[in-house]
Image (cartoon, rainbow, N blue to C red; front, side, top):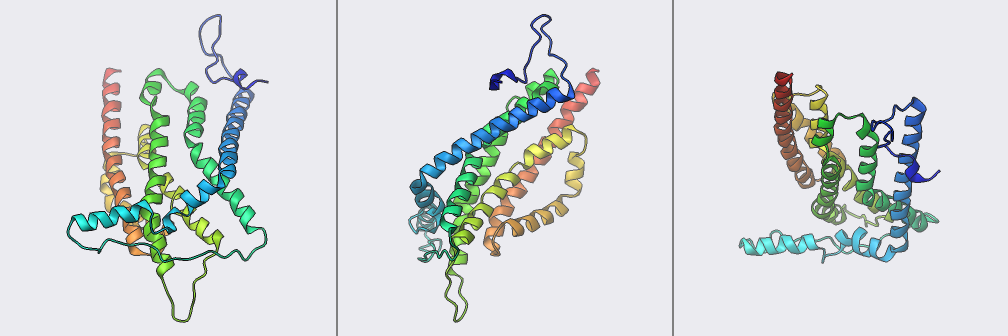
Length: 284
């Protein structure tokens, strides 16, 4: 069966209405959406695997290089503000060890898969949108027509924030941390794990405004509730920040501040959704 034979926008050619789909038809739809999503991840993953020099030397190992763009920007800001070299920073020189046989190849596979997943996120959101679109009313389709772009932009913004802002501070702190009589020799896998932890979870938590919108539309969340428990939410944000970032206070602050800002944006979004729901209820 060709991929385009299973289309979420199936239309009855005789009466111009969407066909009634059975439970098994929905399962078939879901199967093809998952299949196409897996193909997208595979294609981007293979591309990342083939361009390993760029992926590793330029992207993965970028924050461990003293010439990384974030270090230059901070140093320029410091000099512009007349602070001297206070904000000038950079990690110490260090190399990786690979104690496990086959670790290089397995790490290459892992990084390629993660890169494929991140690059295919817009397509994955689009597939989710195509799957749920037939179950939406016309006004809901209009309201959510930019959902794919918004979700993709927020996720990628979170990943970029983690990569360019959080990871340089975290790597500088962790690589420069010393204990008496101990020589640090970080493994390649531990470095990759930290890079993943500093990017993917941040991309997910940046979806907070979208989650607020959906929960408000479902009637499970209100702006009044968010205001009442604002202080509690800030505590939770700090806890989450401490979990997804290394144990240095500065990195936790860096992720906490945008999350708090996103929470405030979420309150505004909840208010607007409530106003629209109230206006629609008055019309009816």
